[in-house]
Image 1 (tube, rainbow, N blue to C red):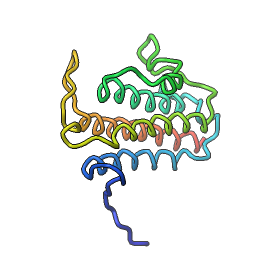
Image 2: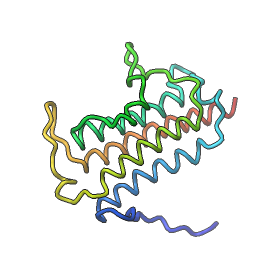
Image 3: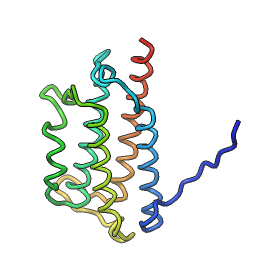
Image 4: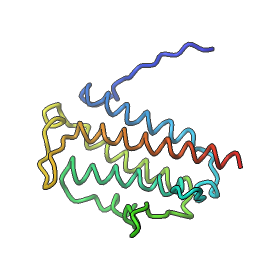
Length: 172
């Protein structure tokens, strides 16, 4: 077995501590994209056991990332280009994720990549003071540091669900 180095690095171009957290965020995405590459449209759109479809979860991951960026970190209006990527909201009337069907893997990857590109760009000039500065919102105070932690946790959770679905659907 090949010996590996399991290390966290800082993404270049960021304050080092911030870059390390963003590297972790990117690492979660790398494994998701790698595992999904080559997935068929049928698998993306199949719903089993009352679970969400993979396509719906990919849409949700990108939407939540954009939402936390604009609403909590930047506390600003969404860029129109990003807003246009989300014609549907997050949830249906029954509380489940909106069902996203017929979008290709390339469309999902484009949305995920575009949101991430904008997300990372907004952190490039951030210093540690701003990284830890709470945004005082109506329901809570939140720091960009906590937002990145939460997004790592959020995407990891859904990545696990997606991987379970992939395993089940690829074995049918």
